[in-house]
Image 1: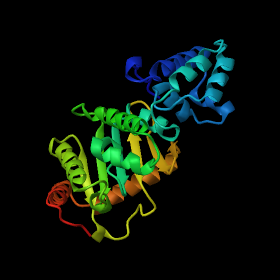
Image 2 (image 1 turned 60 degrees about the horizontal axis):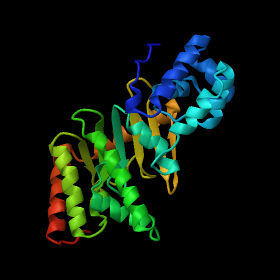
Image 3 (image 1 turned 120 degrees about the vertical axis):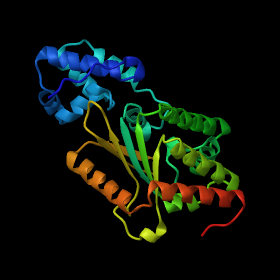
Image 4 (image 1 turned 135 degrees about the vertical axis):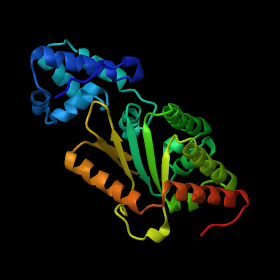
Length: 280
């Protein structure tokens, strides 16, 4: 197996901890599989901890301290890097996004968080949390917009979204909010910063009728898929599951409109919202 490249701790709050874990494991002469076996995790999971794509949970940190005799180093630093501005069920996925080389996503009802405008995100969070204070909503929106800065880089990560037509037709906020939101998505596509396809209603039954899909690829770790529901989310690294989700996304991309046709539809629907026209 190729040796992972050194990581820049400033780019990821878990990178330094991962580097130290890799160093300690190699000094002890243990394989990733051997280190993971006593805590019932795979060698690939240990590799993801070392690469900074997975969060180190406290129980694992305590085990590593016991194995390596590091006097609580991993436990102390695990607690330090576990703080997040994101909800607990999404924090690990948001942190994995930040180091992904490619993100592919199928969205069923909402514009993906990384592509949302401030006004659109505000409407979404107010619907999710109808009794929350303005301060709470502002904090959630700010965190979401901060996430979107990972698209500021001209090339990394590759972001490929398949949007169900319902994403375009479900009016979040008023027409002006929707028009701005769709123009933003179209603008990113026109700048070639993202690839976007629309899965039209006329496509009928498809490979992911049950819900959303999200896949992330990394330079030095196996791919992950993320599954979520109301107030829950989980990163999965089981190779068979990841492969199945990848196949489903491939099938969706095959039956969706082409990027050119999709862009034309998105801009057409945005124009309709601007003119106050109703949608089916």
